[in-house]
Image 1 (cartoon, one colour):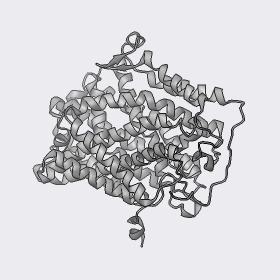
Image 2: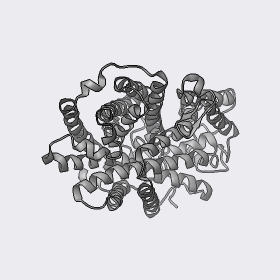
Image 3: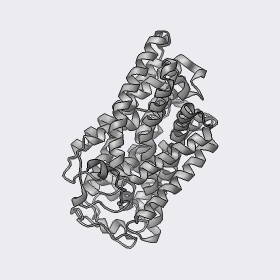
Image 4: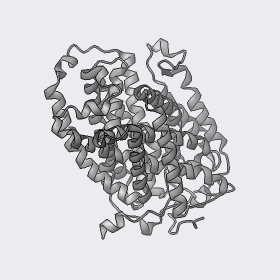
Length: 470
């Protein structure tokens, strides 16, 4: 019976989940986010900390610090799901206005497409290794299977996350032991020297990994009972995401330090090559399955973000099942095209992508969290979130101004190697601390602008019925 429920196609989309449909325990967030992080793209991100010129030992320290710091705002978003019962990005309408939320939403859609594309490239490499099919065709197959799970929806995603977590532990324990015992890891860890600007850049890269999960988090917790405590949602999410990413990224940093150019461009082949030839195919399958969880989340959240953007102007409060499926297929096709066209210089493109996202998403995260915890204190008018003429209005100038300020203040401190360097960055030795300013300045500016003002539309009651479907 439970299996039948898991395979039932989800009917909720951007509409609130009524209390009668809530289920589960926050511990499921640990396995989901552990699986989402304990995978090949995390390992590639860890490799970037060595690519930027940091000694491998200090790279591991940067991985731990970056994930620990970036995981805090990421996990704070987790409590929004049970409290509000709506997807993460539709909450932004309460801060930015129903139309104004389109600005961060467009950037978030780009994020989902980028991560879905990069995940499909790596997953496609693994599928090609198993099936001997062309890589481009393997990417299409992998993206299609990801879309299928996203169509079935929330219950299957959580069920698959549990299975993927167990598989990831087995695979990464084995690969970690193989890396340490078959390669001269001691040699690359010897004589550690600290390049502090590179260290800060590595911390920024790994923190950005966690911060860019912000738009996902409530999507994966919105079916939990509204009585779920903030503490439980936070710690189960934080533990899973930080532990999974920290392990996988540390592995990736060591793998790149040992392999160098043999790793770049052949990430999947090198990692599975750590095992004996007889295990190459099982390891390729494990890599492909391990990447599935986050790839599904990318298309799942991406489709809801596209729907949230467009329905602001059509005034729809919910989607029919066929409409929901069409959004998922649209995102899958577009992301698959990006994957095939952009897979050439994957590692370089990915680091630039992470840096770009960091500058634009940290101000959104700060404003969203300050609004939820300090301004409205978890209380929202659900009907107004779907109505441009409601109490949240079409545009919220204070939020948009705080967001713009949060982006602009980062420009002098920004450092994207080979693309852009702010005029303050050289004085810091090239260190990138812009994201810290983006978080602090935008969050404080929004709180200052809203402090003392009457907060419209406060309604602590969770709706027992969802809006009618269009």
